[in-house]
Length: 170
Image (cartoon, one colour):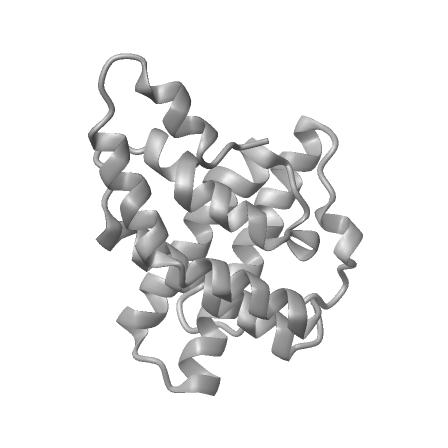
């Protein structure tokens, strides 16, 4: 998409099932679809919400990281059927163990993007408002994630298994 060009209307020509992932080919296809959705979200933030371009970029980057590093390749989930537990698993475990220097500032920026994107999906009627609220609520649980990061850095000896059980990925 060239600079300044308009994205096509959200989900035009797509179905939610187009985001199902069963094979590596599906994963690659869904990754590309997510790029298009995130571009649409970025333009929506700027045009419909008068969000400054830098802020829209940060929010879009956060949801991009969540989808393209965690939800699609690691969990192989359809983003339209995701539940709040995935946010908790990401922020309370996966991000911490897959990031060289996990920190609450970076994590907060990612979660702000995820919350804003799922709020957008709820307002568009693409997910239930109940699911949107649940997901944004999980994104807002910053004290819990701060505690998870702090206790991760404090692990000694065989404490990793205990820490991991506090927020399992499965």
